[in-house]
Length: 198
Image 1: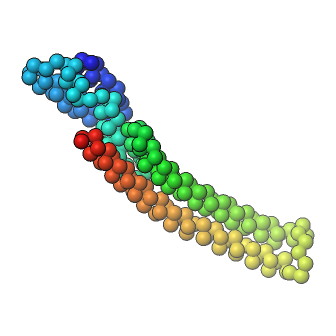
Image 2: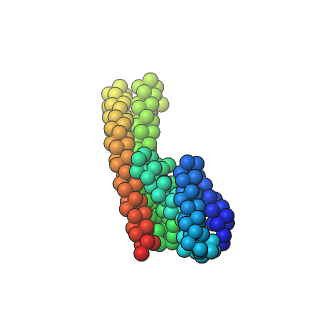
Image 3: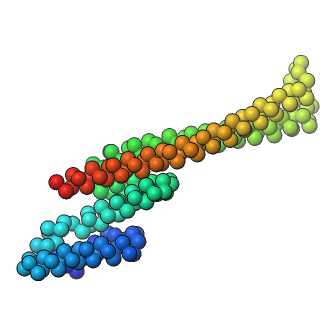
């Protein structure tokens, strides 16, 4: 592989990174080739020494995505960083995809339960109002329709309030989990980089 092929492969592997960063990386590797040529080495030898440009590009992309997730730990950034780190090798599939998927699924499950609780609460409130307005449609023996409707209405309001409070708490917990995942991905990437530099 000569200089042009190496740099073109690297540029393709860096797709998606900011243009300024891609330019800096390509200039650094261009310098490696220039220094090697001055020393009298062949371009193919220099390219072989530098490594696979696709692996190098994946490492830079993973590093960029993990740093982005560390700065702003949103679902999109953390998921993108996780995919970039998993893309570095099969080994990462177990140590990255497993924990990240487990956390995402746990958070998704709790959020879905909160949505269900809110929907049930609204349904109970609407049903209690409907019962108060049209008690003849319901058959309830021995209980005042108004008191029953009032009790069910306040039960619905309480459940809706609880779901709102839990949603606020889940918002904080979700952000905290995303920050932890971003730190975990950063740690995992550092381990990979140390292992590859040996």
